[in-house]
Each structure stands twice: as structure tokens, then as C-alpha cells.
Image (cartoon, rainbow, N blue to C red; front, side):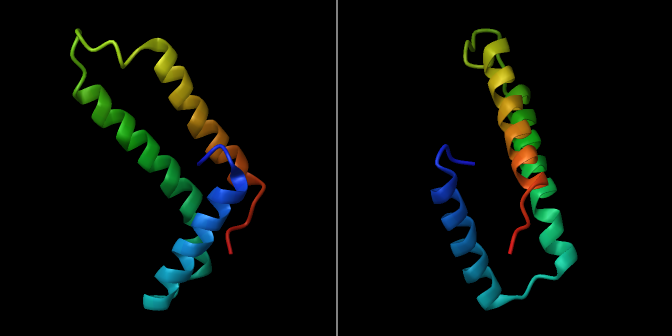
Length: 84
């Protein structure tokens, strides 16, 4: 999710509109989008961890806290929002 929620919501709406031009999504599929998004975050973090090298200063405690924070923000945001 971007820092600007309005821009982020516009991108989501645009993506879903384009996707639905090819295939409709059921209510159950729509409800799974927030969890699927969080799963992608976690998968990506796993890829980073697998590629970790002790000489890599990028993957640090601060980075992990920031990344987990992003997942929390994502999940908290979509707990209160219905995707249309």
C-alpha cells in the first residue's frame, strides 16, 4: 500500500476494473484479496530471508520491523474496508 491511500485506492479500482473486463470475481474471491495481499508480503519477506548473506546490511532488525509494520497497516486498513 502506498503512503497516499487515495492513489492506492485508485490503483486498486483500476486494476479490478481491468481484471473484471476479462473475468468476474465472486464475493468470496473479493473477500480473499486482503489476505492474499498479506500472503504476498510474507512470501516476499521469505525470499529476502532465503537470499540473506551475513554481509547484507539490508536485512536488519529495523528493516524487519518496518516490513512487518507494513503488513499490519495493510491488514488493519482492509479490516475496515470492503473492496468493491
